[in-house]
Image (cartoon, rainbow, N blue to C red):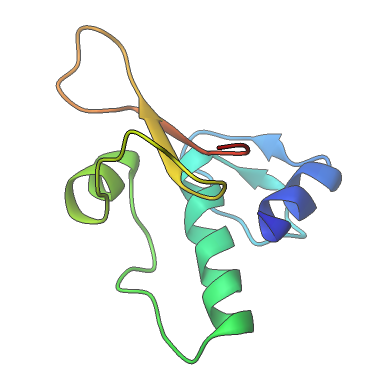
Length: 95
């Protein structure tokens, strides 16, 4: 959540398909998630992520586990009724 708040505080602009670094300030929902996880893993662990770019659909199909009790930092997926897969995701702020 720390890195997501840094994007928020830097007045980041939404741009579909955007995945700019923190100072470039144009990003979409999946780009925000990829970058926040990348920064957190690099800063706090010795691990690497299994992806460098991922769409909302990729996150949902390959990297998610369904839960009825999301915690702060978990991904929440949503989409339009006429689609088979989510089209947007966001970080859970409160449990």
